Length: 398
Image (cartoon, rainbow, N blue to C red; front, side, top):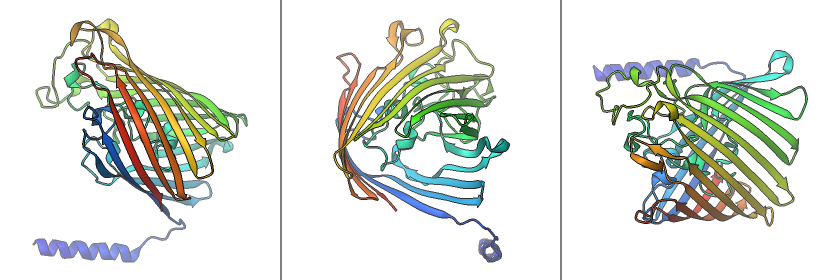
């Protein structure tokens, strides 16, 4: 019977392929390969943005395939298929997955707006534009995108065991939904309006909350070498605890005290950014403030907050040789949380990161980089968590 089913499936597949589909779209393909070496001190861990403890290792950090093409003069599609060790919650999984896939329609509403639907790059923050190895002059992402905050059952703030490994903006940097974007009346002001599933810290492909999220971004382009802007996002990162089908299941852990939202627990993010290019300098900075509603907090102080600021500078000695540095701060609020301790303490430890690096283009499609990262974690002296990381990589576009 199994042989019969296999033969039947093979015949049906062959028929479908032979029939084909007439199309006027030409598919463009390209790819990116990223090979890395990293060596970190023992206290480095995946939770703090690196992927191992103490052992030097080689990894294929990223393998990415890009697809795009035009459906018509005013419609095109694009997608990204990725195997990414550095964005997986389970570091040893290398399975390919669909990172993005969307269709964009241009010139709607009398040519004043554009529409993108599907799964696309988040509009919150600007590092998404430099996330790939050829565009990022350093190795890691800023702390807002890479540091996994202590918002899980082990920290005592949420009893839902499925909420783990969240950063302010998930390292995949994607949103699933609908995006309207364009220019405001032929001025230097651009806008993005997005309705999407889930919060940007937990951007699952399907909505796991009772309501949709929304993100707004305004960008002022001063000239070809400068821009600045602000963005705001709010969405549920965790569904109401009342909606868990079985509160006694393994997904439900820890204490249940404090406020229980009937809808969902929201993440709210505000950010501002500045990008500037001057002669041989490229400067990027962001300020990102995030709050999460948490069920195991008192009603009058039911939010946890974290603030990130970073400044990144790149200097090009020649067209092929550059040096770069980034100073990065992630600051957590300091209040009393009765689920952990009756004395004031941060719900997570403040982090300062300095990263310095150099890179050279071996040819227009190949970049070799080295970097040294210093991480200072504000913990008591008895439990030090400071660590350093040295990295090297080769990124090739094909």
